[in-house]
Amino acid sequence: MLRYLLMSFFLVNVLYGADITGTWDANSESDLAGYKIYYGTQSGNYTVSVDAGNTTSVTVNIQDTNKTYFFAITAYDTAGNESGFSQEASLFIPPPSDTQAPNSPKNVTVVLSN
Image (tube, rainbow, N blue to C red; front, side, top):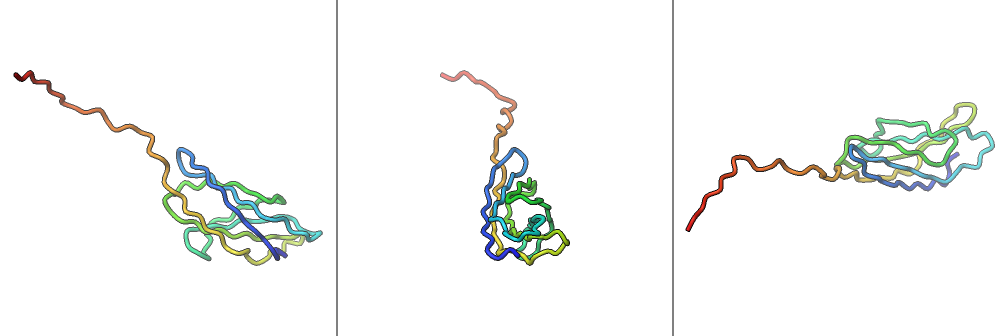
């Protein structure tokens, strides 16, 4: 199961956090039930999992930016057997763009000079 899994990840910055879309090649087993995506901020240590169902893409929203995230995917069958992890992919998620203007200056004084 999950013999030749190729992953790609797409990053879309949103106002708060980032939407990450992962895609992969479909497995060919007749009893395939779905896929799970795992990710975290340390290589090989995945703290979050998302069941993608029987699709070959998933989008997750990550709120904690300015970090590198590591992703891996597993496949599972109708009996509940889960494969090992795919190869790992990583992605740096930059902080959101600064779209807020600074405060206006205060205590402005104008003086006439010769």
